[in-house]
Image 1: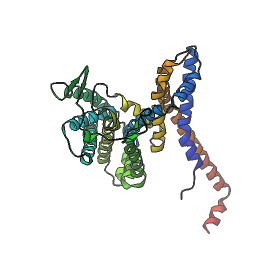
Image 2: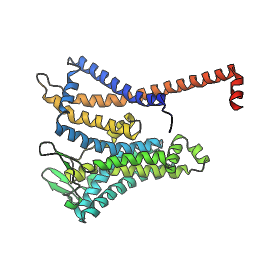
Image 3: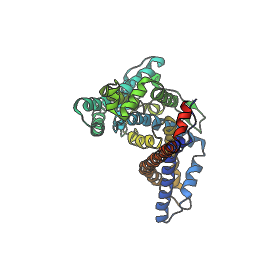
Image 4: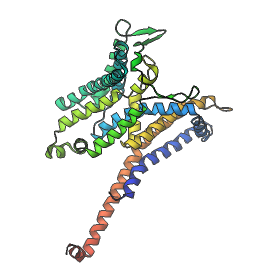
Amino acid sequence: MKKFDKERVLVAVAGPVIALVAAILLTSVVLIASGKNPFEPYRLMLEQAGYSDVQVLIVNQASLYYIAAIAVALGFRMNLFNIGVDGQYRLGAMMTAVVGAHVALPSFLQVPMLLLVGALTGAMWAGIAGVLKVTRGVSEVVATIMLNSIATSVIGYLTLTDNLGVLVGDNVTTGIMKDSGWVPGIDLGQDVGEIYGLVFLAIALGIAYWLVLNRTRFGFDLRATGESETAAAASGVDAKRMVLTAMLISGAVAGISGLPLLLGDVHTYSLSFPAGLGFTAIGIALLGRNNPGGIALAALLWAFLDKASPALDYAVPVAYEKEIATIMQGLIVFAVVISYEAVRQWGLRRQQKQVGAQLAAEAANPNAQKEVAA
C-alpha cells in the first residue's frame, strides 16, 4: 500500500477549487456591475437542478461531455493537443447515422458495428494529423484545427439531398436509423425521462482509461513519451509510433462521443445535432486535470450549467440572462489555467524547501547517515 500523500492530494484538489471559486466571484462581479443580485442566479439554477427531469438531462449531457473529454485527456497525457475532437465527434456521429440508416443487422451485431464505425471514423480523421506530425513535423494543433473546418465541409457535402441527405421539413437529416441500432435506456417515468443506455459506456471508458494509463506498460510508455520524447527513446520507446497511436486512440474515443445521444435519443444526424462539444471537452479535461474522476465531476458541472441555466430566463420578478452560465464556463477555463500554474509553482517551491531542509539536516548531523547504514 502506498503511503497517503496529503500534500499531493492538496495540490491536485487546489487547482480546480481555486478555479471554480474564482469563476463564481468574477461572475458575481459581472452581475453586480449590471445591477443584479449576485447570488440569486445560483439559487435559481440549484433549484432547477432539483427536479428529476432536469437531473436526467444533466446525466445524459454529462455522458457526452465525459467521453469527449477523455479523448482530449488522452492527447494531453501524451503532451498532444488534439483540438480536432469536435470534427472527429461530428464526423463519427454522421457516418454512424448513415450506416445505421442503410444497414439492418440483429441488435447484438448492429450496435457493436455502429460503435466500431464511429470509432474508426474518428480514428481515421485524427490519424491524418498524427501522420502529418510524425512524418512532416506538422503541429497537431494546426492540423486538427484545419481538419475541423474540413470535417464541416465534408459533412455538409455528404448530407446534401443529392448525396446521403434526407429532407425532413426545413431540416436536412441522414434518415432515421434502423430500430436494431437503437440503444434502450433506463426509463424513469413519463414525467422524468430516460437515461441514455450508453451512459454505461462512458463509465467503462473512464475505468479503461485509468487502468491503461496506470496499470499497463503501454500507459507508462505513453506518459513517458509525453514527459520527454528523448528520454523515452533512450529507454527503447518508439516515440513516433506512440504519437501516432495516441492520436488514433484519442480520435477513436472522440468518434463515439456523440453516440449516447445518437443511439439513445435522436436516431439521426441533422443540422440540429449539437456542435462545439469538442471545444467544451477541452475545458472539462483541463478542469478535471486529465483524471477520470476529476473529469466526471467537471462534466457534471458543465452539464448542470447547461441544463439548469434556462431557468434564469423565466425568473420572476427579475429575469436573468442564461448567458450567465456561459460566462461562468468561460471564466472557469480562464481561471483554471492560471490557478493550475500557480499551484504547480507553489508545489515546486515546497518541494525545493523540503529538499533543502533535508540536506541541511544531513549536513548538520553527518554521523546519522552512517549510523543508519550500520
